[in-house]
Image (cartoon, rainbow over all chains, first blue to last red; front, side, top):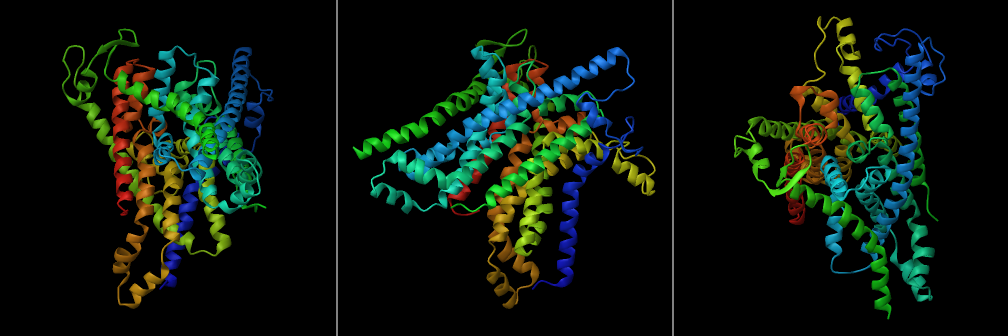
Length: 278
Length: 292
């Protein structure tokens, strides 16, 4: 059925497709090492200035004012990175606990509202982030809550709980309930069974869900954009603002570091998933 | 006794998620609905009085004094739906052949290419869009290459155009289309395909009568997952689209963060929400009836 010519055409198309996906990432990486600050598209020479620059390490010929502005924006970027990490750690913890608890409840207990929960848990994931973002903004402001890192964490948890739920649920479906029954028959209480039998088996799914929640939280732009206070930006919002104000060559270096970080995290996730459970 | 203990555990497991999503997900959505029927305050904020002109301003029953009907809002809504539909089509055209190709690779390579598809999903959205900004700029890579090869003499003005918006959306949505599509293509019953060919069906007939119906659940799933975030998108048009590439998400953002007309912004958001719920409803009912 598969003709060699058809297969060759399909292969060519597919390889072009992957080139299309990866070309933009390589463009950024390439130009983060280009010394030409005026037109980044014209290659001048190899430099690490943009990397040392974003961490405030480059001694460049600048007047005092622009030097001060430069250091200030570096500080802001590092503060944004710290905020992102802070938010992601709390969001991951909260949404992982809630998502896992829900997945266990829906898989192991029969109750009337089960179907309802099943659909309801998908809704925050499917709701466009702009709708959720402005909904939360009106809600917080109407209630008189100060917009802060805490409102960002709340915003992230609303939809990331759904992501964790889906992933843990998929893992639940593959488990053998007989093990839990055996544990109960041998006299273990529900909590002991949960802790000693169910959770260890679920661990890879929970880790996978937590990792996804962490990555998406670190990357979320829209919801953060609406519910962050003036003082607290996260890294994506900071980069968004930087791009809106005009392209600066430092963005290439920041972006390259972010790409490398995500490759590392994705590889870690794949490794966790491929690991066999005992 | 055992039953009471069970329901106690169930309550502990479900109480946090119920309260959290009840307060921070359902209530905010209800508040958008409420605000869309309130009077805009003079200096931002709202006055708590019923007001239907927010919708009137969009759909045509504006009072003509405070609120003016502008067909532009409906045009932008239509454009957003159009761009989202186009994004779905293009993602499908790109991903469908590749899904077949990946599913036929030896196991080891399949894993590699599946990983390569999901990797961009893990890398920052804003970074990937920024890359397209660099590529599409008048002095960007695309124009530099095309001019150097003599294909064009003037730089193409792709950036800040509808084409750039759709390209950007296709680019960020590809993983969301590919994964559901791949799942259904991978489950394709090869025996049926061969049977169809053996029984004298030609390639087209086999595709339409055997392959397409079997992969339709993946196509529909991918289409819904790509369409929904595309309709309300405002980041992609903000970075890659100009005034001509404005989408309804940009209108919402403007109303909230610069025009400070929250009730009007809420009315626009209600429209996005209605479109999304409508699409989800169709997808769910069709899936229930057992047809893709």
